[in-house]
Every structure is written in structure tokens, then in C-alpha cells.
Length: 66
Image (tube, rainbow, N blue to C red; front, top):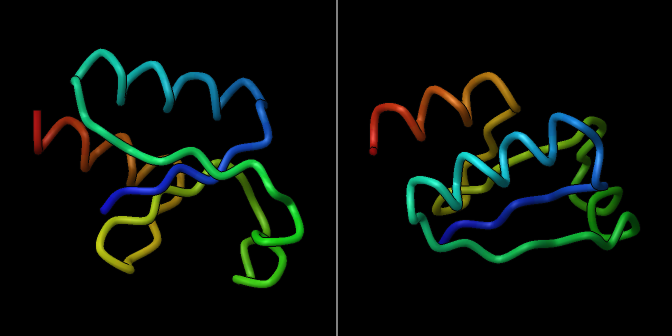
């Protein structure tokens, strides 16, 4: 399962577009309290099977899996 933690910032929108363009299914999480609980300090974050990826690593993952 893939989850996108987003606050709607420019990088969040870029990552969301890349996921959509690559036809990767994901769940969008916008609850900032949930993000704080998970220790997320920057957005966007992409969670893939329990592993958290920051923006740069998420973009790399999409390129590798597209």
C-alpha cells in the first residue's frame, strides 16, 4: 500500500502529479495531526509498505518503478 502525506505545498503537488501520471494508486493523507504522530517533519512524504521516502527519494522511486 502506498500513502502520500501531503499539505498541498508545491512539492506535494509535483509528487502527486508524478504519481498520477505514472498511474500509481495511492491513498492521500492530509491530516497534519496524523503526520505529527508518525514523526513526519516535512512534506510530502511517500510511504511504501511501511517505508517512508522524502520528496527526492519518492521521485527516484517513481522513476525506477514506472
